[in-house]
Length: 65
Picture (tube, rainbow, N blue to C red):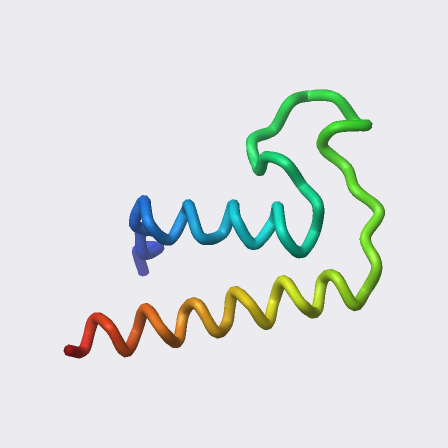
């Protein structure tokens, strides 16, 4: 089964969630451990996952209209 492609808007939303909730400035690999690996509090991960879930729900309802 083919993996669905994300729209550019979805990619921007994911990057914004990473910045706001995880304090990760970019999701691009920079090939440096100190830049590519992050220690995160579980509550930050939960907040990011909740934001992503809600963004997906909003996107799903918009596409049905």
